[in-house]
Image (cartoon, rainbow, N blue to C red; front, side, top):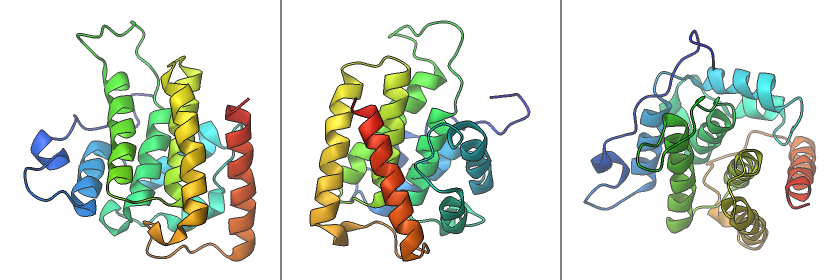
Length: 199
């Protein structure tokens, strides 16, 4: 990431991420938006087009563009989570290796994104975009040699797809603007991504 690009904000305060009261979808969405910091929805679209789509095109550019609002508050949870996973996958690691006692922002972003996916699961939320987020996190783990995490994530991703096909009403998006043909194409591309990672 170049110095001219927007940077992520520090990790949200624990009371926002894991509030002491009832934890809701809104709490999680607000925490992710805070983590995205100064990044705008258009920034994640640009990052995806530039750094992921040419070699791992599981999300159609037109589909992502149609789902992204101008500001984060207008986006559903699964859209902001997909954008967070795109941000994770396009983040350049630090030059010095991580020390477990002093994790870098790179490792913190990974753990934050993975935790956010786990929280959606705990809230009973599953959607096609969350599945794509899972794929990006698994790809990140494979690319950076995070084992056995990558192996475990791959199994969880396949089971999330099975669960989505059996219980599609648990979709976190209020409406999906993609026409049926675009949905079928994106579904095929997503399955290709899963099969490539599962090799």
